[in-house]
Length: 81
Image (tube, rainbow, N blue to C red):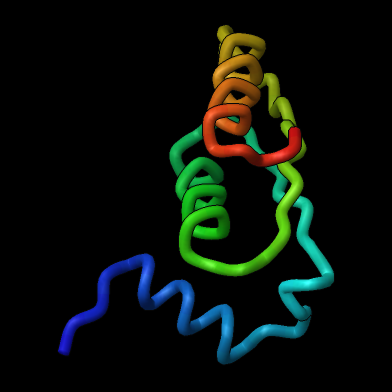
């Protein structure tokens, strides 16, 4: 049986969790693919309460635009920013 990424993530979080979903998490987001996928996985495939915080590495010329994109994504997915 093969698992989807989301199923494998959710199982791994449940198995190895040091925190309860009631504790809540702050996810630091740059706007890149890695942190956006992490937000998606926590938002739609776990029961954790999450808060998004943008972290601007200032490595890209349009990093402010990425922050605005992350803010809009959080609004669309009903994640406090």
